[in-house]
Length: 557
Ligand code: ADP
Ligand code: MG
Image (cartoon, rainbow, N blue to C red; front, side, top):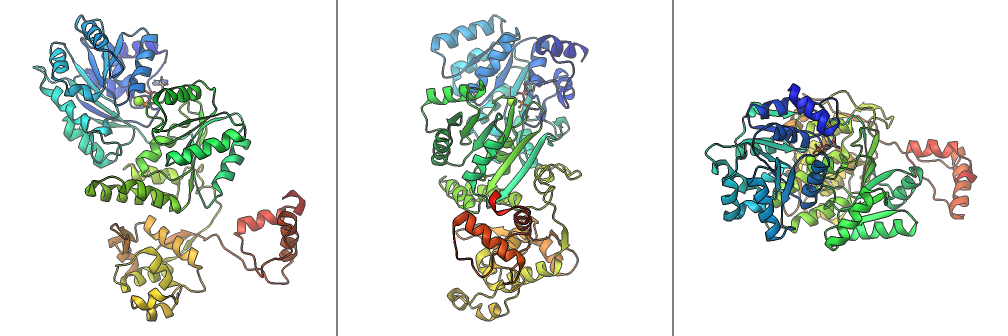
């Protein structure tokens, strides 16, 4: 390991290894195949690059993206390390030349796309080389349970029998749930003990979930407040990317865009502009970013909720790779769920759709959770939750925690009485005592007359309470043509009185009486803002808004 440390210093100019790097390098040098799970920006590349320098022969690196290979090879060459790549951008002659260099022992690392392994001629050439180490970057691509399955990754298994001795395998990924880890280990024949997982927590990132914001306005304000900072804005669709790009360009922002619908040369040049700080904002779909090593990204804003937690953490994790405080903001609206549902349902494979919808639900749960967001992420990735981060929007909302067990029991009991066959909206309607036609149609007219939560909750509050119970795992969603909700084991514990439910106090609303002094204040405000004479009989604001309004004089608004 002393020699490894010298290599780190000599070739890369770093004094010490980061968390997880040393044990991975040591195992790899001992010839033990390993799985390395480290967050984005954790420093996975060095884990195979240093062993590659120290082992005799050629290290083959499987990498999913052309741009990623090119960047890595350029960086290695700049550090005086003989490396090359083979992918579809090379001519046949260039491929041959590269393979000749490799055969002559001039190369230490060779990056290839997994599709290459489908060529028998290529495998033939490879079989004549001495390959001690096989690095599989973005290893989650091999798993169907991952969020980025690439069937061609399965061809990696052909390399296990290509030489008399199976090379040492080092699989690397940033976002692997326990199920994905199991899958990777099984497919690449790695022992469970040989897994090195460094903490997932990124202590310089502050996560926020903002519900019901005016998204455009929020982004405009954010960019004004954070004037010189670089950041990425992710949207779910190309159309949304184009629209935000237009909006920001019109405002005179220095902005680039990226999505799969743009011609390749434009994608490359837009990416370059962002990487070289010529454009400070990148607006993109999830097509942008894998392997991007831009260290000074200060914020990642999600204009829409992404389709699963893996994608979210990977995309948000592109903020703050330099370790400085950075913001990860998710702007959530319930319509985002429909957008993602629609996108998921475009795929043909039924089994996959069911699986993706379940993942989408965990993403929605994240948006509705009331505990520490950092901990919610850690728990999702199978890590134990730590003390609340005190940086995220939930840790900083200043709300108190209350016992809501009785209300939870009312909701769960209602779900049971309705036969656990209905969706959230139906249940909410029954709970607030709706008199609409559907009640009679489905035979709930009587149940609904109780208005179990009527007066206590508005219909919007009931919906958000149901979302909360789902996020807590006390209600569960069964996906199908119509998603329905049912009471799982955890919820039954609540019904039986064996478990209490704590929730942060709801954003309370206050109805203003005619003689409330605030009423006059608001009337003046209204006139100032909208020039409206008419003020509704009562105005409902959250306590926070109310407090803020009271602190301001009319003219400031
Ligand atoms: P990952 O693949 O895990 O997302 P990279 O391998 O691209 O991360 O590394 C991220 C950044 O961290 C790179 O700029 C790299 O040079 C830097 N880095 C890696 N190891 C160290 C180290 N031991 N000390 C300081 N910086 C490091
Ligand atoms: Mg990487």
